Image 1 (cartoon, rainbow, N blue to C red):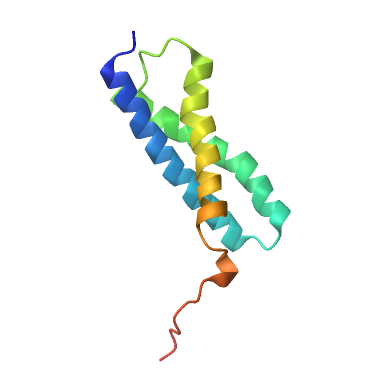
Image 2 (image 1 turned 180 degrees about the vertical axis):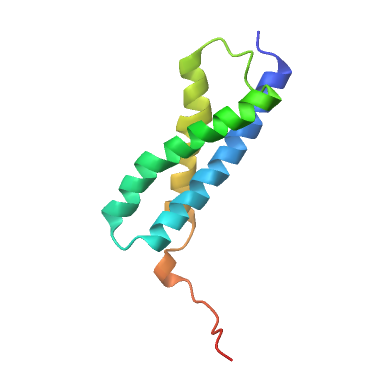
Length: 106
């Protein structure tokens, strides 16, 4: 049986990692001029960023230490947030070219 603290820990990691993936995807879409460049960076660097974040958050706070299966933990902590973050940025947020910025020259 899974402890309540493990479920809460995975929920926190899922939420934080989804936000990180969405923000990083948006950053790559804004900064890179090609579609393939943004997709390549999102596919390679965001999982690396999520692995580092998992190690930093799960070590000191003990999040997810009671998980029995490593594959399930990786899917929940990296796979699902990566998919959700990219989907949020691509499907819900407007394209970076469609956003009107205010004129800052005064």
